Length: 316
Ligand code: NAP
Image (cartoon, rainbow, N blue to C red):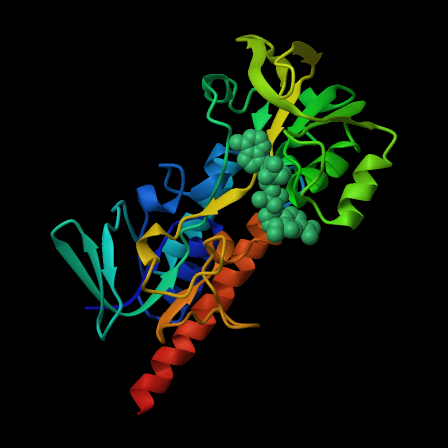
């Protein structure tokens, strides 16, 4: 039986692995399809340059950062297996994780399965991924390819507002494409966008197609008016989808407490979930900050919470 299993190998999972390994708990990290968009390592694996992770003054590529985090955890004895957990039984101890017929038993569990950015589902989003298509302005907005150029953000919620405002630092114009004539975002965020001289609202519009070519990547979008069906083109070098995130909590429905949009509920100021011995960290329980560094920070918290919980059980 394992002392601790960590589900997910992104920044939260790797940091939890580092801390639990150093506490001699010999963590096993299971990362597979559940951890993120079919890629072990999480969302950072689809991010080109990370310039805001402390400790890398020259910036670092997402995959390189993940390789470093993993290496650091492995150095202290963390084990990583590429396994997709298919179901869980958290109704008693030991906790059980199933990979099809195979069973993993563990005393404690840290869930760090992340969240997946939602895209519209256009084929062109895939084609131009990392060539102008992104779902994270904070990660990618400052890249040279976007500087001084027009950009497009899709969505009318707080994420879209935040992305658009952030992009005004680099873009010469930001077009916010929203399918209705009223924002979903909070008034304060919406007002900032509506009053910003560099932002143009494209109301009642959806992205019909992303335009571009293999050498330049994204060069524009074709928008469709939702009322008239009329098509028009907007030139841009960046397309940012900001239509929400989907936390990867499918496995835990009906088993752990989830809030309305599917995020795992943790107790305020800690990483305890609704089942003792099960902890959650990173984007799977965070819809506010969603940064690699905040995920890593909460991974550390989960490791400390889990280690103390295991210790308290040994004492009783
Ligand atoms: P959200 O509030 O669900 O907004 C998603 C937006 O995308 C909506 O405007 C929606 O349009 C649009 N959308 C969804 N599917 C679409 C589609 N297929 N085609 C076109 N448009 C589509 O998601 P979010 O902005 O990521 O925010 C999630 C939560 O995090 C919210 O509670 C938000 O307040 C919070 N948040 C807070 C902050 C902050 O306070 N700084 C920052 C980010 C997020 P409709 O409006 O027509 O449905």
